[in-house]
Image (cartoon, rainbow, N blue to C red):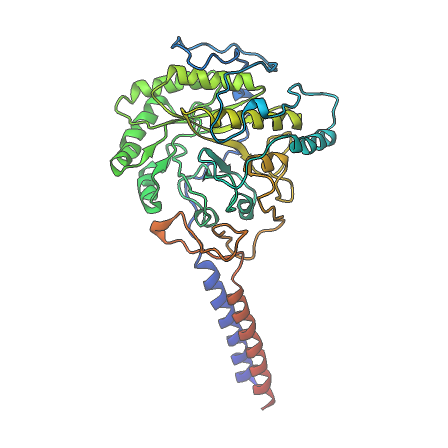
Length: 431
């Protein structure tokens, strides 16, 4: 009797151990330099109001000093909007009201935004080479809506130096970031392991709640650990400063201290209200730093009126698609609802809200609700809306495996093995 019981429990233990080993083998260690901040802008680095944007070809002028304003709400006016080649021009895009209605409730505002989506011509089915996301989803499965064959998204990042499995094995090219000064000595190895050809660097180094770096120290770290990547053919993105009054002086000091730095493009962040302020900031930076192409790696309209935010997104994406000196942009942010935030792209259940449908491509993106973490490590496919497609990985040097939500084969084997063990134990006991 004791022998049979021992064999019975040994069989169960062996089955459980085999399944545990199989599930754990697909995971990779998390990066040690994961930023701890939420990336939600605080009022301390929300840009102040700016004058209307200049003409198409502004002449160089001294750097203007922004004048603080506690509640900037510029009214829309004609702006230098060139006609993009592949997106609808602003003349054919119905414009929603750009003046927030303080009396509207949150539910009424959301309803208006949903109905307004039907008024906006939507592009879908073709990748937009400029449009990307900063992945800040609460669950790994949140990437599913961006990882579609017909999604407009063409690149992604997550403020980290290596991607987790579910981003690494998606079909969205991943761009690593050296977020701050910590662990910079391993960044080159991380970039090489991924086979990355473009990188981002210090995240809001002028802001105390983010990377918070001294410009001279940042220049030294750059020259020691980031500049060598240039010899490997990697494109180097400069520090991404805020649009607050501290951003421009920090960047000027950094460039003065890093005269031998090779910066291939200049990332920017902007949060505020009104297209004039946003366009004005873009042209202001372009005028003063014309040698650098620009990436907007975080930006959002901070109005509490959902229709205003939707209209801002529609106007600005069309506008930036038509500017050749803006290489890429990423709306902030790709996450579920958060308190006092109206610029999230996802609903509470993980599906796309009207903003997400406009940004990623309404009518073509499969909106699957994700309400709980997957049973095992989630790794998405090249176009999860087409399961017959071959998997594709953006982590080629590490040969990251692709798999679906779980491992049905492993689960079936475990079940069969367990039932067989129970049956064997019962028969042995009877004998």
